[in-house]
Amino acid sequence: MHKKMQARGVLALYSALTLGSGLAWAQTAPAASSAPSDDETIVLSPFVIESSQDDGKYRATETLGGSRIRTNLRDIASPFSVVTSQFLQDTGSTDNQSLLTYTTNTEVGGLLGNWGGFGNSQGVSDRGSLLSPQSNTRVRGLDSADNTRNFFLTDIPWDSYNIDRVEIQRGPNSILFGVGSPAGIINANTVQARFDGNRGKVENQFSKHNSLRWTLDYNLELIDDLLAVRFAGLLNNQQFRQEPAFSKDRRGYVTAVFQPQVLPKEWAGKLDVRASFERAKITANRPRVLPPKTPSRSGSTMLVATA
Image 1 (tube, rainbow, N blue to C red):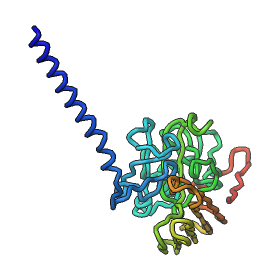
Image 2: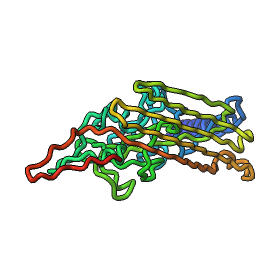
Image 3: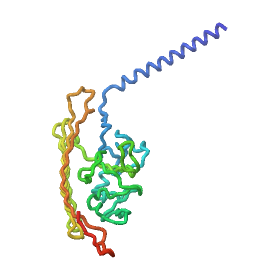
Image 4: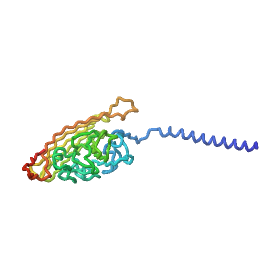
């Protein structure tokens, strides 16, 4: 019996030494991995989404729409669609009227839309579509979606000249965005200044009826990793077959990012100060879709007004 107890004691001591050596090895591993490497890890801001983070031309993987923090799309329960800047360019989509015919469960009124959008009341009118065509939409057959810019509610129609991506969240979003439309939101994310050097582009489009569109986008890094500015401009003259209908859109946009270097080293790159400003002037006499209304039996006529 005494020999058996001695044998058990030797086995226990051997096991303890084995575990101890394993723990000691596990503790020394982080010291080896803490050595600096040539490939530095780039940590992205959890509050910023840019097209450079998209996986491919049309496939986006992250959004701020789920929780206002960068989240994977596969982790968001609500129906969500993200339209990348490359998709906007390849399809020639510049606003709600030209985009929502391609997206899921969305309808848009107007000349080239896929929905009448004249209302269900006794007096059918297209006045709303003439004054605010960006709101003449219907999502999931419910109602028009709220239009937001960087998740702020706005009545300003977005244009792709300064838009990085468009996010369509279908369904009620009252938890995230207050009391809103039960149809959802159509959010347009504007482009941001970047610390990736000086680069830009100029594009033009010619279309039928002598329509002309010019866009400018240029990023300027004034001070390396400290201050960057980005400019964007739009000159759009759209003509229609119906005369004298037209739409003239003039816009200018500037945004800047400042990354202060006065913070401690361990905080470097974790604080960005961003600002943006846009000025626009839109003059339009949009084409009418409804035919002239015939006089009623009472002899009254409808006055056709242009917007």
